[in-house]
Amino acid sequence: MSAFAAVPHKPLRLRWSLAAGALLVSLLVLLAVFGQWLAPHDPDLIDVGQRLQPASMSHWLGTDHVGRDLLSRLIVGTRLSLGSVLLTLSLVLALGLLVGGVAGFVGGKLDLLLMRLCDMFMTFPTLVLAFFFVTLLGTGLTNVIVAIALSHWAWYARMVRGLVIAQRGREYLLAARLAGASRWSRLRQHVVPNIAGPLLVLATMDIGHMMLHVSGLSFLGLGVTPPTAEWGVMINDAKEFIWTHPQLLLWPGLMIFFSVMAFNLLGDALRDRLDPAQERH
Image (cartoon, rainbow, N blue to C red; front, side, top):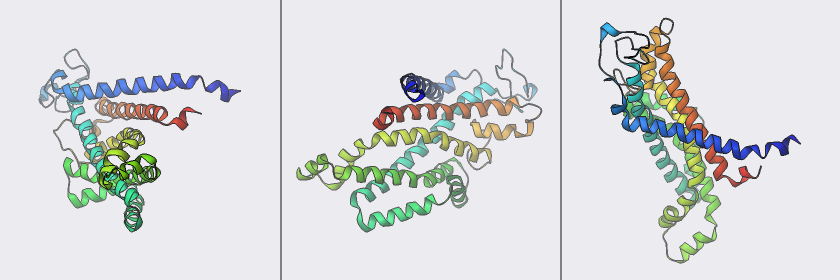
């Protein structure tokens, strides 16, 4: 009886998840695009006389250890925190589509070779691989983006390969082949649009994971460096004041938390909406 009772609630849960995720993501994008105009103060303005101030009418969330406005730094930091993750995701998708698409569409020894390469990368935790590549490439945001992309691409390549193999024998591809379309044209114009749904779900749900990695590496001083406004950097700056002024760490931590939650909610809703098998249960 309980199994049947749960069915009518799913559309409501799906709508709530989609609405909440879309709203939170829209707010993040709004802050990322217009943050420098929405910030009430200059995020880099140092005023030692106003250091470690509590929340007030002039500084709604207070100030940090050198007197910078916390709210302004949180707002302006959204652009770098979110933008770096989206750039990382773009690189991951490009690598995953290229390697997985070629492996699944061409097959044979090339497929075997590329999948063994994927297996090698997937043997290690993504964060361990990211540390390894940062060690090779050096510190800095650009190198962190490349390092995280290199640590994630194999999972996408594996998924793309499976999706391409599932599409390879479809009639629309046979028709395109008979019409004279090249292998690359069939892959780009016909296969990729038909596998975009599952990839969109995976990418949306993986944004939170990548955001934790980018912020974590910045916290360790390997990515974005002070005094740049970025959430991981703000947490790093606040670690010395965790017991006396915990709000310095709380606010950027909450921004990361709600950002991860927003993309997870959106990804969960997209998965239920785009996967017919999910909707039947």
